[in-house]
Length: 557
Image (cartoon, rainbow, N blue to C red; front, side, top):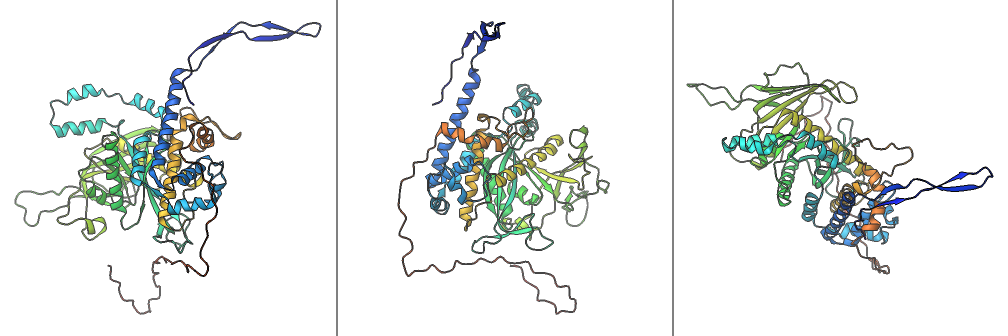
């Protein structure tokens, strides 16, 4: 039972012993010293965090609608294991999992998770600024805007202009979210449905594509203003290449709805890497209170507004001067509308950011997201194109590519906020490394994608509890490990080492396992037959023989 200790100060006399000439020891009384009691503010804060973690675990248990006890104990086994999770059945040996190994597989096969309730729990209870108190103190030092004085100054402006100024001044209050996908490799699982070629560094197909058969999971995580190894993962969805843009837009709309339900308003900034359709996401999320920041691949082309004059004949033009996203910094481009020069940054040296305001991409009605989701005249999607040039990378190497970014939202934002916000996307890569390397995100070799969905959400629940319990654990490091730097939170691995001690104090809502006997098994004389196979279509290879007969062209369906 946790409680708040009383704040008291006691004066004690500390005895000391000195040697006498005859060899005996004599005890003397030293000056009384004052021993302060515990700080009541720190004690109250620790109690509040313990209660918040207990409430989170209770609500998490309610989200498990079938096989709740086994699923919850499986999550505790992931948290309390003193080793990296490399095998699913190995978790049944942990003392936190009080059931047999059969119950472990049965929980993933027959269990059920309320996905909407689980996502709402993460969006409402997790801290969306993973940096903790250090990040809040850092934001307080930089947010020097007097919002009361700002509102009085905006009283005489039109509503649209005043809203744009408020959006630009809400930099330090704006929530940042990163969206990225990671593979769940299942190259040898021929009986697993729904597999396709997903991007992976360990190539299993050919020498030109880095793909592997498996599933792909897209995570949405909150990233803070300070660069740490922590993010707050609040949503996940299994995606496919054909429906990735539509699923990403649905994830963002669900995020806005859950933030509004949790009274966490404001237009967030959603950051995406190259590979996502900037035009499709901008069109599908038009009118939503959200800022999009998407990295563009090299070779993308944006267009300004066309130049026209009275008396011009013919059809009105839709596109003006093009701006090509080239990797060469000296490539010919129109003059930017705005530029920002930052000399001597700590990690990148001199940074130059150029912006072209009000540009738009060329949209084709027979390609991508617009082919099946847009009917009628194609829109003009205006936004801001940014080019980021740095002197060197953090490790000293020269950059081999020029970074181009696309921003679209309710109002324009400052260039300094946008290019620094994109760096927050790399925090999610640290989260993926920990989820896979320590918590075993892809370690469960299950057959169906539904079982993989449950396993992924259990790993998310375990990581969320580590984020909440971060201030409650000590710095449990190995003798060869270095202490964290000043102002840096403890890593997720060190928090996991102390979670077993926290679990003893907060308890578990799962019920005690009941004794049982093995079932009758399969009746004699019956056979289930071989499991169905789900082959993956292979990409046809090009024929180098020019004398061979031409193939019949394939019709796209």
